[in-house]
Image (cartoon, rainbow, N blue to C red; front, side, top):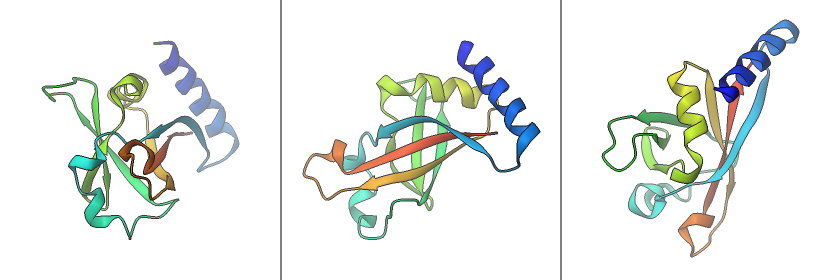
Length: 121
């Protein structure tokens, strides 16, 4: 609840100053990428690319699950340990955007793609 109030306050302040402003609310590694499309699109993804965040409230493993997509391809998920804040904000109707922050050719799938989530002000 406190986050939603903070996001609402940021939105109100941001709306008074400039269109298109945003605030970074989370930076995370991509979870589960080894099970989805990342290997097929690896060479195409770049830092700065837009990502879609899709709530999965009916996910049988995690009711706060948030799927991460790139150009319509499922890449993985927001890590379970870090998804509550984003899920609650999405459920409350906050406008969130995401982008790739880094791409690394690492054998550890948790270190291959990192992304950032912003609240649009």
